[in-house]
Image 1 (cartoon, rainbow, N blue to C red):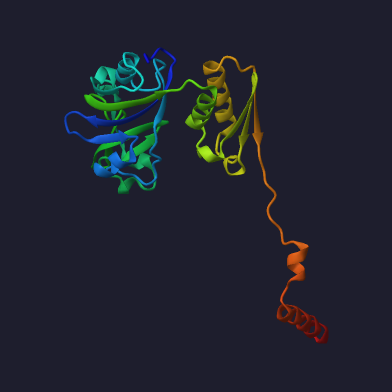
Image 2: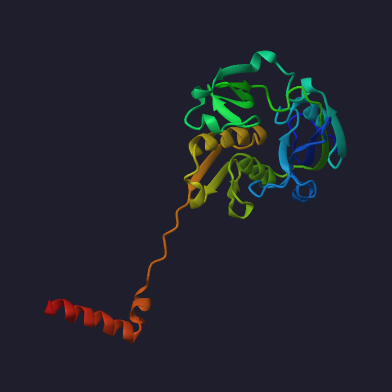
Length: 256
């Protein structure tokens, strides 16, 4: 099935730099383990992409636009369609003390936040630090191996995939009920304290209205469950020895 602009698809991919063959991203857990790039903090699963909408780098987006569901493709992406050309003006030299209390611990290759931008330390010496604000892979040619697993066609699978794109929630905990032109999404208690939840809900709603235009209203419900308490029956079943100990304590307190 040919992919059109706005098609929602699930893809697995592994991305490498062409010159060093370094794997910098993969959605496949076994692949990460085989290539010794496995990170236990990462959730490996197919990625949701809207074709032609800039959800992935330009070169990959163009390749997907010319593919079909079920295709396996290898794509070479030049810097101008990847993470950009290296810009010398984005490299700055600053006083090391400006990086705070732990400035003396910083080493080349470390990533720092400064002036609301992320940069990579390239050089440390004589009380000065060189910081590169170019993307880590700017100027690099990239190779992507992509498996286009499927194109989403059912409203139910589009809803769940669009929600999970922005809200880190397990599939089994995700509750979404479609009723004609309305959608109700239940957020479990363990997700209600996620930072920026209100912004996330607004973004989810915007995505859903865009990709499922039949919906006229979307409702978010936050679910809280009463904590279990000791029942009356459990209190009645208190062991006799325990009851006697309580009575002894009461007597002891009266004597004092």
